[in-house]
Image 1 (cartoon, helix red, strand yellow):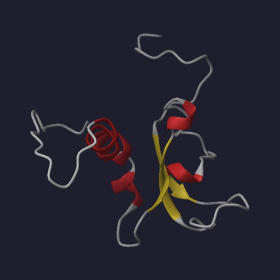
Image 2 (tube, rainbow, N blue to C red):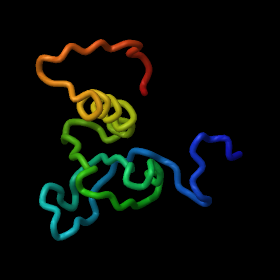
Image 3 (cartoon, rainbow, N blue to C red):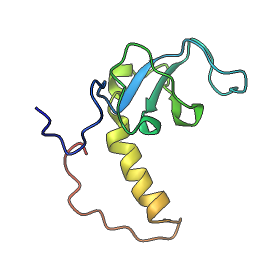
Image 4 (cartoon, helix red, strand yellow):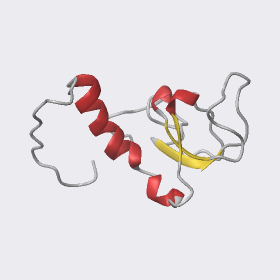
Length: 109
């Protein structure tokens, strides 16, 4: 209906976060290997495209999923953890001795 606050050029594939199995990596990538279970944030694409069958993501936005964690548990980590981390660490520049007040800590996002 075109009622979203963000209106990417049509057609587009929605989805901000992705989990999956690595198919291949670039020759300069050493921290991730084919077969690794990973999650990634699609911020390099403006927060869209994660629902595609196959995606290409810069290695800096890809994180390994531990073997004892089901991939479905990581599918929305980006909207929760990454947003909080960015707010606290990048924007707030919080350090070891900083005092942080968490106001309204409810919901998933």
